[in-house]
Image (cartoon, rainbow, N blue to C red):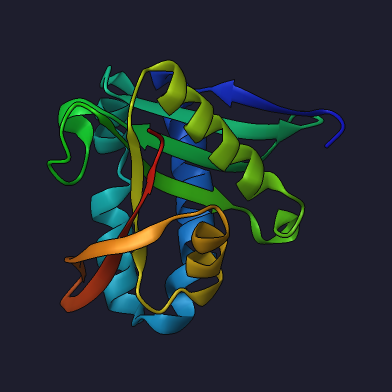
Length: 173
């Protein structure tokens, strides 16, 4: 992946993060949800104050994957209290891997996953975990390829629609 780099984000990147978040989330999930539910979720999850707070949280890390100064996708990782489920201090959560549609199937998801595993290993974490929508077959297959196995599930609310995310983990011990 020539000229492709991972760039850590700072609070100054909140607007760029908001733009790519909305674009990639809509591209991934708009066809499976009502417009009203999609708008409600986007306004809640990706408003600038919320993204800025997430970027300022020392237990969360964001990365853009960049090629020739173009942002192709992003990664969000959480440890400690930033995790969306109480998984303890030995865990690292991969909360978001989103790639712009034009750049999918170019190995960028694998670049992000390797970064997550490397950071978890360097931080002496023994498990890496994530949640994935139960109907997102490409993502589930990707995570299974990386050795993740389902261990639980939780509700994910999209507007007025209660959906199910599968929780998957991979042991690093």
